[in-house]
Length: 478
Ligand code: SF4
Image (spheres, rainbow, N blue to C red):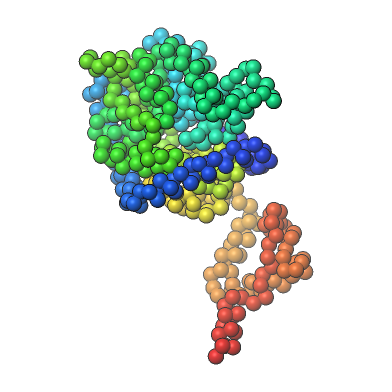
């Protein structure tokens, strides 16, 4: 599995100082976030669709073994093969062995976050296969040697100048910057030849339909369709949760996915793949292979508090809604999945010990929950992970909270549990903090609560509680 690469705090601090990235990632708000609100507003049955989407995913995840079995049977009936990979290493090995056996030279990839989990493109390049990303954003990221910044817009942090430098070796600082269409044409020209010589493709799966053994791909560029028809071998890779029972469910899921992702009513391409080319068909691959990966998902499935995260359809709406993601950007999350959903799946899949600061990367404002098309309660799971981090769990043996911190929270809890105790604690805090307050504000609190005022001022406890003010006002009014 791809390792967790960065420290959230230091990368977030770096991104906050980068004016160009701050400007570029504004698009997730002005473009995607606003687009989703508009699309939802234009869909009168929007809330009904979300409820239906949640019910479909809840049902599927509760009967995952049944639907995975049905999917595998139907893919095989359609002439394809299915491989269940326990982890990323097993999946990678299976695909690389297959490529060796079929004497593959060039592999084209169409956007897939699961293949990012596997680190597949790097591994295949290391094995000597020419492996090229064909989604424009992923291609830019591959040229830059980076990881995706966003679930659906991997290069959203790059400016046009950055992209021009990556696509044109002769581009120099000060040259006129090509517009988006010109840049796209430059990439298209480079990729056309790659499509022609590719003998294997690896694509992701937006939804796998159990009852028909089909996979659905949602794209806005022609690369998905080219990848599934031109090369002689097509390998589709998916996490085991990317499954839905029926074609009818697919129509619901497509409506909520596309509107939530880009604000479109329908994406430019929705490609359905039903296995390899049939004898009477003119195009399509000679072989179709489906790789279904676990890679820690069973841990999520077995965890009643975290299972809901398997409902995720990777639309990116929670990222676009998140005030933290929109400032710290995607690379701060250090692994494949950024944003609020990344702050849940990364600690569970890679280990809470190394990713313990991710659940804290949230203001718990709830915007992600409101935005999620399948109503995943992200804040609830973030709180659960914070609790496990502080108190210890099977995944993280050592508590990250110190004795002092736990003592403070214990005292706070006792104070909050009764009205009299609360009033007494408030009065006491005022007495203790009054000497260091200036005009009713605390600019610098002493340890162990100095962190509270390291980036903002804190108001001094009021001299009278709201309750006593209201009751004296009521008395005066009589
Ligand atoms: S958690 Fe919800 S909003 Fe976030 S990517 Fe998944 S489906 Fe989309």
